[in-house]
Each structure stands twice: as C-alpha cells, then as structure tokens.
Image (cartoon, rainbow, N blue to C red; front, side):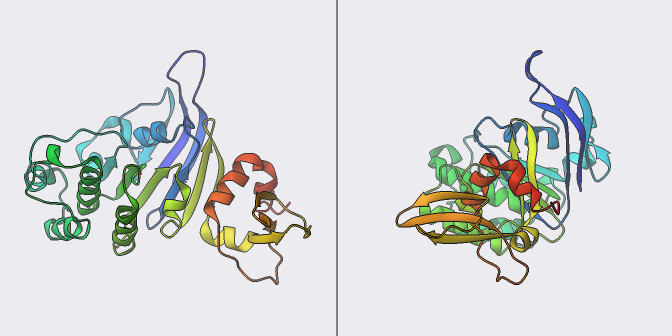
Length: 279
C-alpha cells in the first residue's frame, strides 16, 4: 500500500531529519507509529499524504508517487492532524461540502459514528469543545473509507470516556481493505487496536514488527525483587519490576505491554532487535 524508499528530508541545511529512510506498510493492518516528541512522526505522515516533499527518495501509494498530488491518489488518503481548525459550520454541513472529495464516503456510517461518539451534528463546530471537534473529525475520517488513513495523536484532548469510545468505534470498523497509521506517544491508549508496531527515533525506524512476531519472540513478566532471570529490559515497580524477557520456545505467550516495549526499544534498541534477527 505505502512504500517509502530512501527518503531524505531536512528543515534546515545542516541537520537531516530523515536520511535514507525506508518503510513498507500493507493493507489490512493498523500500524502504531510510536516515538518521542520530535522524533519525526508528524513529518513522516505529512510525506505520506503529500503535504511535504522529500529532498531525495519517494513515497508511493499503490505504486503512485504522492508528490505528484494526483486527484485519484489524494482521494484515497485522509490525514487527521494533531493541530486543526474547524469552520463555523455544523458537522452535517461540513460533510455536505467535503464528502464529495471522497467517492466512497459513507453518510450512514458518519451519522452512526457521531452518535456513538456523542457529537451534536447540527451544532456549529466552533461552538464545540476541542474534544468534541476531535471526535467529529475522527467520525468523518472513518466515514471517508479512504484506503490510507493517517491519524496523528488522535487521543490527545480526549477524556477517558471519549478514549474508550474511540477504541470501541475503531474496533467495530472494517479495516480489511485499508491501511491505518496511528501516530502517538501515548502508547497505552492504543494497546487494544493496533497489530503492528513501528518505532521512530531521531529520524530513523529503529523497530518494526507485527504483534504476532512480538508475542513469539518476547515475554512480558512482573518479577519479584529477588528474581534474576536474563532480562532484555526492566523497570522498577512497587515490590519488584516489569521486565521484557527473551521468550523460550515452550513458554506461554504473555500479554504485550506496549509502554514497556516502547521504553525498552528506545533504551535497548540493538538488544531487543536481536531477538527478531535470530542472534
């Protein structure tokens, strides 16, 4: 679906944010794009949707270069940015104006999603809270049925019930023919919905594995203070520590702790990646 090859980009002449970055994204997956603030997540999403152009390399969607901004390609992409402005019109009026740009827009689903997210469809968007406006845009984004859906920090500004509503509506949607990329540094908000983990750090992809591979190669356990098995990474907790361990072939699968994994990948990049390289 998405192919990024040898992408090089910089905001200044001296420092390159991306230097030969490569990434492949497939249809039917929900990718969690994780990274610290400033890692380049938003910049990478902007390259995928044609908002930014690389100095070298290219980004293609279904074998078509995004930088050409062909209407047939752009109508298959929707970006929900972290920072946004809404016009002083209702959600229904917004959909009437913008839905024609997306030929597969589903009006019935849009209304159902807004109802699920408790968004008032006839109220001016500028009169809604930030969280309500964000939920409206989530509903519109899903209703476009765009083949590539890019969500930049979608849970920022949402309260706890709204985050639960977001996870519920994502889980109930059919994503089999779409590629969804959710960029965030709030890792725990996405634990139940993503099936592929991509970690970006200092402009480089430092980890890129699906959930199945992670379950097969890594174990996540809470250890007592006196337990001392070989650990790839651990964090002190009350009465012990949370640890990432190499998974033994005959051991049971454990629940993946995404926040622990993210911290482990940042701190012990090479050590954790070795588990997937047969080293």
